[in-house]
Image (cartoon, rainbow, N blue to C red):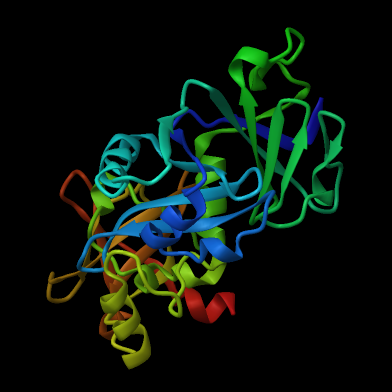
Length: 312
């Protein structure tokens, strides 16, 4: 068994197809990233905001074919509302919005950059960051932290194309995938985080998830104004704890017990070590903080660093 590669079934995500002759312009006017700069067979992070500039959805957008066929990968719990919101803006545009969650099976592949990285006959290291590679009916997408997302069409999966737990690789867990998100500084908008953050509050610009130059997306004026005025009161921090935290858990000042932030991403490192991303008021970053667990008990947070400062 190859123990340097882990495979994970990613059943918590949905795929949404946006196609048609107006797909590129439509998405450019709706999403936070600059779709005009997204080349065919490449991908990037993006979001959809409320009119107040707060993220309602985050996704990976993939330009599959010549600017008229895009796939968006997002948390399954957000897909239906996302599609319904976009449909309000279609009007007379040549656009098709289709939930293709049942069409694609998503598998996460984690590899070590200095070890064996061959998977289904492909050297995973050869795929550029946010690049797409088509191999027969599979699409491979390179993500940060030595992770590849495999999209396989269910109806065309070969009979010998086995499920992750049948492959000659180590079976990983969603904790492994989430830990990669923490270390890459990636926050996925799920119901607990919906309509709470400006894109720059979760450092969305790191992977060009938001463009401050382009116009014409919901909430753009508020997002751009906050950026150019430097008026960002809450920012993304990386931290750790020795208790199991959950997305949406409240972060408090341990002295005053005042709420100062929220847990946005959690990855399990060991049975007793958890790494996380939190969004807190910048004025609270030097103080002793606790996370309030679902039991109602505060637990100390350690090693708090602003993500932008350790990433750049």
